[in-house]
Amino acid sequence: MAPRVVVVEADGGSRGNPGPAGYGAVVRDAETGEVLAERAESLGTATNNVAEYQGLIAGLRAAAELDASEVDVRMDSKLVVEQMCGRWQIKHPGLRPLAAQAAALVGRFGAVRFTWIPREENRHADALANAAMDAAAGRPTPTASPSAPASASAPAAGASTGSDPATAPASWEPRPSFTATRLILVRHGETAYTEQGRYSGRGDVPLSERGRAQAAATGTRVAALAPSVAAVLSSPLSRCTATAAAIADAIGDVPVRTEADLIECDFGQWEGRTFAEVRQQWPGEMDAWLASPRIAPPGGESFTHVAERVHRVVNALPKAYPGETVVVVSHVSPIKLALRDALAATDGFLHRLFLDAAGISVLDLWPDGGIAVRTVNDTAHLPAA
Image (cartoon, rainbow, N blue to C red):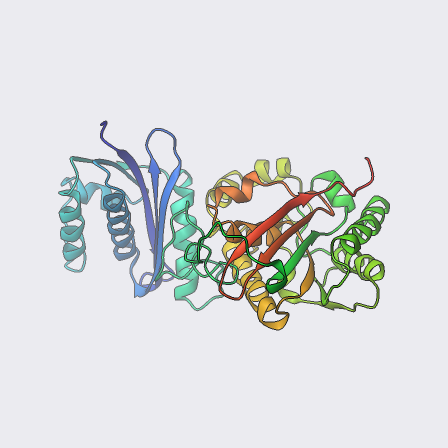
């Protein structure tokens, strides 16, 4: 079997040196560049160099957990790279124990190579470190808890729907549907931004004429799927409330209740821009965002944070509406995250699943934590383009 070679990218820093500090580390497959693991943690008050060493240590530990035999370490800290290569003396007494700890981890691998890289080539680890520094400074941060670092291939901690699908009872035995709470997940109808392929987060973009026709068709379809509906929940944005109102009208005598946690991801500075525009203006930030649900767009919100609030809603519905049907009208990101967790899928699912405007997905949730995804992105009811 060929030896497993990985790349560790690590960074750390502080706001003030010393000041609120944190680190970030990413482990990649050396051949494909696939992200295998991430680590990030707030350190309280520390110096830049202490945080950089802590990032290196965390990255080496993650590589060891992956049974790597060779490691290429890449950091934009000249000091750490030169000291670990033995070319510079470690004069600061506070760094010596950390360097010794890193050296002990180096001894666990067949080979470890250290390379200095420019900061712009270390954007992923840098973004994780900055998020950790924000947390250390007491700023709101959308990253996952540092005490439970997540790998890029595993769903974020605390982001499951209902009970954790990974630990929910597994069985091929058919379950009686009448004991489940059925969620009919509906993406809102089309808007001008949908047609133009623009990031549409918190901006209140209304339904287009085509979107209103889609909403009416979706109402007819939902009424056929569920003659009895206990509640219609909607994101507070008008493209969702208008879609929800069309569904409620078709069902009859069901009020629409808005739920703030169902709102779309905040895309920050990317709002209203096309993918190509974002790629051109924020190439590094986009790469980091696509590689990890813990990374937020500039001034925006991470998918990890969106998953946490979606989890609150979905987890509460079986308790509030046991054995009943609830229509949930939301956006691409919340619905994708709900389906990812219901299917116990990896984060790659988020970029591989396509959800059409006014598409319908259906999942059942049982009181014992059992989950069944029955439909994903049904669009048979929609008028032809």
